[in-house]
Amino acid sequence: MYPFIHLGRFQIGTFGILLWLAAVSGCWVLYKNFERKGVEADAINVTALVTVAGIVGAKLWHVFETPHLLMRIPLQLLLDRAGFAWFGGLVAAILVLMWQGRVAKVGALGMLDLAAPAAAVGYGVGRIGCLASGDGDYGIPTSLPWGVAFPHGLVPTLQRVQPTPVYEFIAALLIAWYLWQRGKVDKPVGLITGEYLVWTGLARFLVEFVRINPKIYFGMSNAQVASIGSMIAGVILIVWAQRHPRAATQSRKHKAKPDTHAVPS
Image (cartoon, one colour):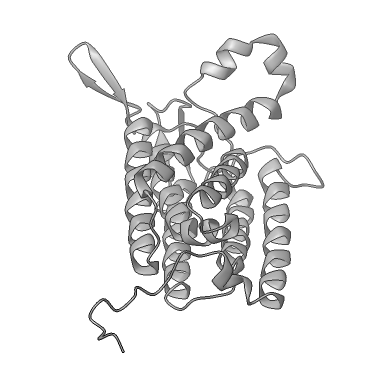
């Protein structure tokens, strides 16, 4: 794997390149969803704000997971190019999207529904950045034929390990496709977001069984505990959405345009 691309005296991190590509991919999906739903909002602006919030949230969550290291080497931990927690990025992104939904007058949950397929695509592409840089997000040692080693990664290993970023990439694209298909017909507001939380939580929970993250709570990693929380929140949101179907038309700016060619009576 290649953590950096060298251009003369300059070097560019492959994780950064893939993160940019993840934002572009997510932005395109969000734009297409705005377009098909008749939403007047700036997909580029929304994506930019969410991307920055997601990076900051993911970094801070990872940092606060290890308070003893934060107290001992705060600057090194904060400036380290590796170490980003999925759940921290998710929480920060959700908060910014809810705010953007109110700005765009589609409602907080309405914006989350619109952004769900884009979030899945962006997450999946971002995981390929983890693979390319070898930042330690790989799995446990394996003898499977598709196992990979990261001798030049940011967190190097000579052992062949499970390529968990690839698993997450495939799962994320499948989730994005499913949510996109679900969004073809208007659903109660919050339903798509609830399904996103359930499916992404389940995918992350399962992949953690072959990840190298330490098991802390009842044999589960931090990410697995967060994934359970995500799935519970998703189920609650799905039930709420199904019991409040009228909210779907109240939170989306999807109005029919007047017929300018009609003859006055």
